Image 1: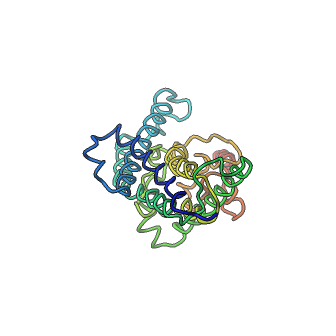
Image 2 (image 1 turned 90 degrees about the horizontal axis):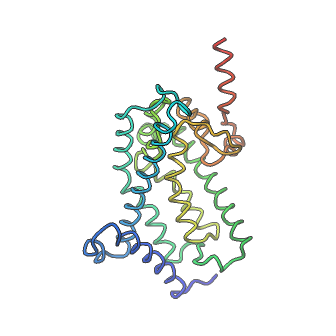
Image 3 (image 1 turned 90 degrees about the vertical axis):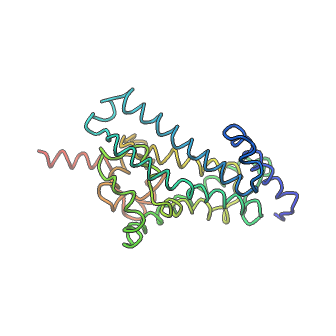
Length: 278
């Protein structure tokens, strides 16, 4: 599709609209209105990402640690306040850098460098859903291998990924651990979302939604509750990853781990533990 300036302005108008919605409700206009468009977009992503992190984290913790106390987790498996505050501290230090990635991706989209399209009506519904499925497969593949290399390449693990893996027991993991990474680590694991933009035609707002859904998804897979919904890579699988360091690198599903021989099933883990106890 030939991309002209009039078409690209649709992306700029859309990001400007999102900027106004978020920033006008959170900050006085004199603090953000004079800023260049790129900085407005980054500020919007930073504030929205921070709000999403805290709202999803607090709601999820309130539900599983208070409303459902001893239903999903025994009391001794609940992380300490100190552990949760440390996770929040690490995530907040990284948040300004995390949100630079979607800001850069939006700039590339506005510049016409990607295969993004502006309106759902530009393609058929079949193509829309096929493109989302293809996009997610590419993202899953990319995150799997990025995550695995962050473990296998020792300097990357030592200087980047080890920051996240200090949470290596059930009583040290919480939904707030989902974004508690070294900033570069978090960016590297989200880069497949941006790479996919150059390969698959994807609806602009859908891309943004999927990128920000990462905050909710990562909170979910760090709550230590095994949902047992095949083929979802839920918290049961990810908790094993945090304790063995060499299994279950996948993100949304178990398929990549199954294909590349790194899958470890939490239900089989429970059976093995029972046999050892006997």
